Length: 208
Image (cartoon, helix red, strand yellow):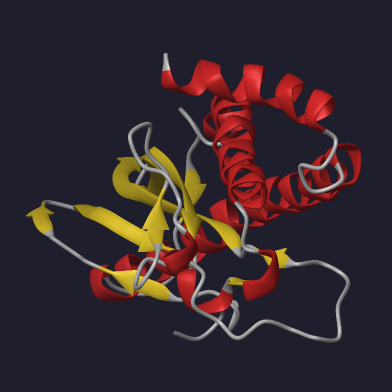
């Protein structure tokens, strides 16, 4: 779709409910989605989930690709003869991409796998800590629509709302990427068991 970042896969599942001068676009989906594993309290990574070829040119023995996917709803209202849209019900998901994640087979130990699970947990932790702030960027706010008719306004509302949320999620992704590097460095990829244990205590709260 024009105007959307090429690096992000956009899936639009549109259930349109027509009203007079009003439309609702339900469950728009922005992110990796296909062939990914979504974080949940009862899910644990396995080495078989790391399906890409290992990279002999890098120092690390394993590499996880973890990204955020989001869904949202676009609603519209008529105010003073102007059609505006609202962004509602933003949901965020931490997802692991098996096809881009890899491990060096000679280093595929339980210790390293535990560390990589922590890296996945870290993404969920950062999501939870920042979700309210993300939602507050849009809750209760009205945004102008573009287009000359309802179909155009609906199309532009999809694009504009998606780009607006994606800009905020990109900031969150960058924060996670920075925290992930810090996690790897501080724990030495799980070799520093004392520091790893300290992280584990924090991650444990996600499952309580």
